[in-house]
Image: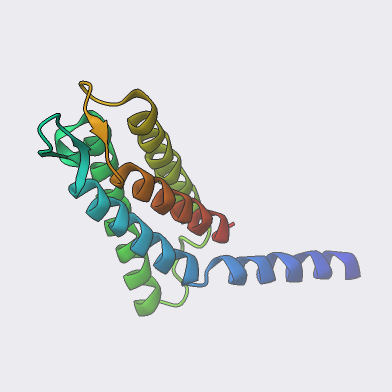
Length: 142
C-alpha cells in the first residue's frame, strides 16, 4: 500500500513537471523563428538574386510545419493560462518533437541536396538550429 502511494506521488510529480509552460513557450518561439527564417532567402541564383524559402519545396514544408506548430503552442499556452487543469499535459511533446523532426530533415535536405543548382544561403542553417530548439522543447514536455 505504501509503495503504491509513492508510485502515485511520482506520477503526480511527473505530470506537474510536464505541465509547466516553459516547453510550450520555447516551442512557440522556436517554431515562429522557423517560419521567419524560412521566409528569408534560402538560396542565391548565379546572378545573386535571392530565392525565398517559401518558393522551394523544403521551405514550403518547413513554413507550414513551423506555422502550424506555433499556432498549436500558442493555443496550448493560452489554454493553460485560462485553465490550470488543462488536459494536454504530455501530448504536446509528441507534436513538438514531430514538428522538429520534419524541420530538421527538411533543412538538412536543403543544405545537402540544394535546389536547381542554386547556391545555399545561411537560412537553412538557422532553420536547422531552430528545429533543434523545437526538439528540445518537445523533450521538456516528457
